[in-house]
Image (cartoon, rainbow, N blue to C red; front, side, top):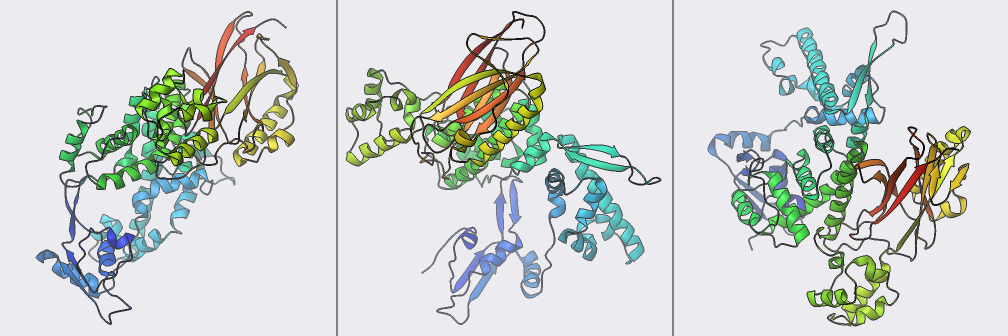
Length: 563
């Protein structure tokens, strides 16, 4: 029996054979647009499939290789092959993570950090592999070589730190010397952008590109999709031989056009854009390889979008932030904003949707809030009792969120205590304690409760509390049958001004699992100091990170009056 497979089988499945034939040692790299050699580790892994311990006492591996490379492969098979480091190629992002973690606090500590790595050990053992200047030395002069390596480390560190400064991930400042007479120390501090890159495991170029695009005026849903797909994280998405033609044909069936002015059909970013459309609009993929690629695109898209939400919030972009969360919902539900939120439910045909519309039910909240939802579903043409049972369980298990707000004018002397209590409340919410905030929540803020119509003194610190609770006990995991990973869900709570498209603050709330258990999210801001009698409107938006159509918005009109 003969099995013909791609090289990836050697890594994914333990499939031993008596004879392994590697038919060529090159593959087509879509990014470089040429054939390149397989990594040595891949060839070793494919050779390692030869041998069946339970059947054979010996096995064979045959490598078919171009004649000029024959001696190289013979040498690498029969002689030890040194393992070199690749840290110098990714050092910039490693340094950023260590600076965020405060492992590295100065330029000198960064150099010291590198000397404790395997990269430094290989640099001293085989300097010519890493430094071209060392390769030019005709005779081994240890003093000169040591100076060269010190200069190389110096250049490498300057390059990495300069890249992080240009990306906005770190700031460099002069620190006073510890002892009198010492030289000043170049201290490094992480910025918010650097913390975002470290938190979501993103490259510094990616967050810098997001910051440049999201700092502009509010972006539309389609523009957000394009920004996501253009990020450097998708540079390595494979575009195989002739897939540019497949992409061109597939683009004709996609609803959103490819911008050929900035995208080509052989670009991995174009392919990511087409794959996301196929997922959201339910299009058939041209070949099976695209299914594997779609899974990798979706896996990477979630941390990318969460990082973009943090950056857009830092830029106070309300519209961009809401569209980012909307895209997050659509990717989880394999839907799009121009489709009814009812479409995420299974077993609902077009006829069933028309019957629901006739009953006045055109969105998901209108169905799950019906007390007679079970009777409504009985009237729909659903194929089979099992399908009806699944649909009913889903409708009853979707979260029915209730929210209300409280506005307080904080006492001037209580600001520090309020800030401490808010930090404690945020920490408790992130830990996701089961309803403990309803019984043992942080101490109540001292201040005057204001009821509608909201009238507050000018230039005073206000606290807006958003109190949320579930009317039912929702499902623990998100219903997302077309998303590759199982996940829990949470809510974004946003305070903003929709009239001027300004985001004031955003927080993520993890709800207690019990029904009717409160979860408080507090926002602090100041009333305008300009003039008495001014009315301003703020909007509270509560958005799901996983479900379409369950978002809520509450507008508050606040007027400043004299005390």
